[in-house]
Length: 69
Image 1 (cartoon, rainbow, N blue to C red):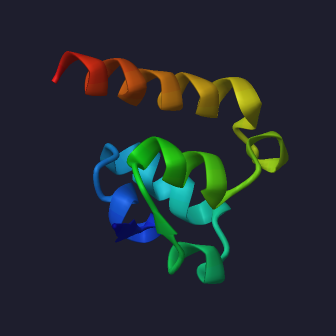
Image 2 (image 1 turned 120 degrees about the horizontal axis):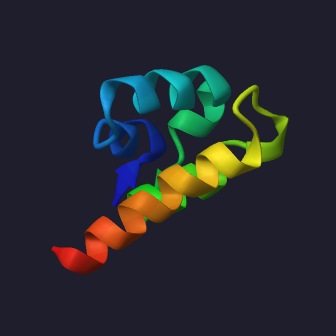
């Protein structure tokens, strides 16, 4: 298992930058089973400047990508 911060390394540079800005330092050290899990548990989407729809689209993009791998 990897930490949330380690999973964020799988995001694009812009996505990673935003995810890190929205995640508390303490949460970055917690472990997650997947990138999608890291996105879900890393921060509350609706409390970010990007809002829920943006993070859902990122989550869904990686979910589709994972199914196609």
